[in-house]
Length: 304
Image (cartoon, rainbow, N blue to C red; front, side):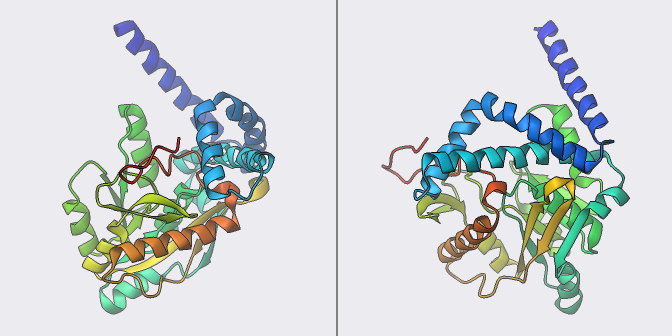
């Protein structure tokens, strides 16, 4: 047992060392490396490949099998690039990272709204593969301090690495998903913007089954409920990896109008429709390898 643990620790530390070395490479080189590695990843990651193909079949039934496979191969290339790009986000200088992020839209909305009315902002960031870049842009390029929820990693080394990577650029707090929501609420009430990821399946608790590309998907009601409870402005933030290693684009969109309402389920369905629209703009960069439809309404069979 001790020998196995030692080998595992050594393997993880070696992998982290390799990742650290990669951050010295120019982004175009990492992008080229992603093209090569993604071919291997597509074939080796069999379970994720099957999940991705099933998601595309459910969401885009009008596509033929060959078209869905081609789209998923593109997705694996962007996904691989996002993993390599993360080495730059984790270890490169803040000045280098900032130069690579191209911001569009009203990035100063959260600070302006708080100064004018004391209202906090919720940054809604769907699960595109450039998700971490959106968080870096918020910390590097605007003044309002941030807060977010994160999924604790099973290995303490990886957990520490993820935490450090997400906190290194500025005034931010992150709270484990398994903990009480009270510290997060306190942080938002004190003026921190809330970086919220609204589109993963966390089970039926505190969720509603609302359509996502026409398929009922367990979707958290928390964005609507929290925004209404704390009188928050809700601003979508969309991340995109630019081709050829040219960096990343982060769009700070206009705040959602008519959101929230007293009907949290209707709000949640509207939010899914908004995300669908963004996915159609860059379908290959959405996170298709997550079991978005894992939880099913009572009595319905599983989809995977």
